[in-house]
Length: 429
Image 1 (spheres, rainbow, N blue to C red):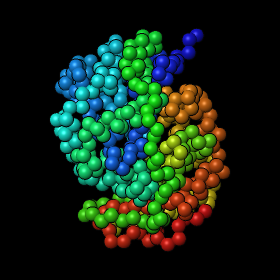
Image 2: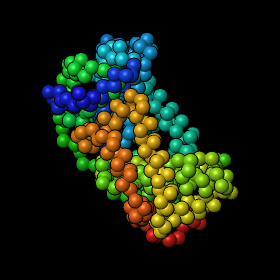
Image 3: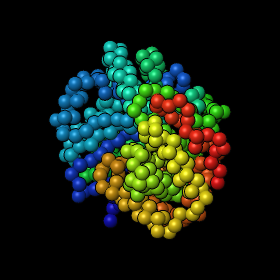
């Protein structure tokens, strides 16, 4: 029986990973570039996201309008997104339109015209996007927290979108320099999942992939991720007239592929990852103090961060902060009981398997596994990794995550002083 997952390499080194799912009628195809806001020099702040936009503004043979019209005619989706470490361009279409969708996606990526008039127009669009984020305090507080956690001079501490000043300053020379340095074969993985013929897709992609150089110039030196500001242990308070105060408490996380990653998944889910999590139950269900309260874990190539978010009224934020500190302290000092641990594991395993019902998530998994491991990780191995987590590992990771040297808090809202629970001696296990 032929393995549904196949891995092939183009002449310049780009890897194509496919998963054939003949029972489906759709395909997701993505070109993943291992570069993001973390790879930007100070004068390039925001250029990864800027490029993600401008690739779609026209090619040598297609206008921006025609690109949109062709994709609409296919009944599919053509889109892109930028993270701190990756930029991804993808299509999702019915399987019988894969050839056309491949040509459209790769024309966008290899023949973008970057016309000055279009660049200026799209810069204004991104400026409006930046302003929109600043009007969404739940989103903006995470950007502010990133600066507090990692430092404003480090790439991890800067917003992915850039600033109005940097975005308006980009021109053809900036684009050329960044593409030459970062859009190279050694940084690219192509992944596809769905009802597809791997040989046919490989042949269709080959002439496009050949246009990417094997390597770029040496990467510049960038500040290390651990170059954190000296005042990180003191809460950062940003005053703004809002109905709610938005709070983020952050601590250490784990890098991609870390041996303890499954334990961190369990810790995050236990703390605030779902509706049965401790924070959701204690703050929202039992006390009605917040509508939105959750935790999340971000993994990067060499580090990570575990964060807790809550939004509450100014008259409730002190109590909310105290409850967050109490739950973190409990995880650092009291082993989770067997029943709760098994429930959290069940939630994680179910969420993992259900998330892989769609072609986009399966395609994404192929790409991420290729970047981290150079091979696809079996789903059974992921489930087994979750099953191996025990209470002692969860407690050890809680102490690591919220160690006094790494914990920090950020607040945005109509507040004159941080909640008392966030002051004084940091949490100690």
